[in-house]
Length: 372
Image (cartoon, rainbow, N blue to C red; front, side):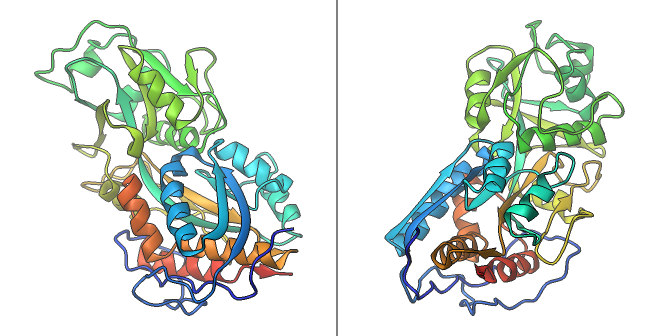
């Protein structure tokens, strides 16, 4: 059984942050009475162990979150296993994880939302955005650091229809770039991945019909080079000339980066661009009092927006049978969505902090996590 002191850590204050979102109104006050400056100090120390896992895109941010939270609560040990979003949702629903990270919100396409409700005693689970980040289309061509590509061309590359780097569809968007005749080698995720789900959603929405597959966390094409996790894709792209892949932008250093066409402009991945794209997105149909999913508008023409992004969620229960586990989940998740937590992720992983209104709503939801 997890043990913790009866006193709970004071939750950091509501964020004053950069990202603008619409929909899902929220209170501007923290239900836990946190300080408005977003500090991370606590009035009481927690203790015990807390296990979570899921989206590998969150891994870098999770390292920062765990380090900061554990420094304030030295008797707490938190683990986060970056097994991928699908694995995180599965292990949460089975009870192996107290909380999960997922780059895709829960749906009942494969019974996952129903499974989460069953795991949480019949209640809606907690599902709040915690990490908003651009997905970079990365490539390895010696001497070329950046390329411009529209969604249709990207879709045809990953579907195997464009096979050489000097293809006219690529060359026409990159005047003055000396493109080689090197064969293109696409790399995709081998695991059930929220990054894949978001990337294929972009190709499906914005690809002008060039991507004939539905959005899915499982790569829909047989064959090609596959790699596990964000780090696996990055390693595979770095390891082969002519490769191209997709990964959380925070881990894309040292590779060529694609600027995607948005309206009449080409936009490179950035936290600010992801924020602009999410700003025009709306809550999903599954939204409820404790669930904050968003359907991202991948076809926006908003200047400066970068629509190849993921909104990564924290998934938990509203109530836990063990009071100490409830306190740990409440404390850690409340820190993540606080100003201090969001700024830590921005500094460590280059993510876009949550808008203050969205942070307030998320804070209120996770701050209400308690024991049965």
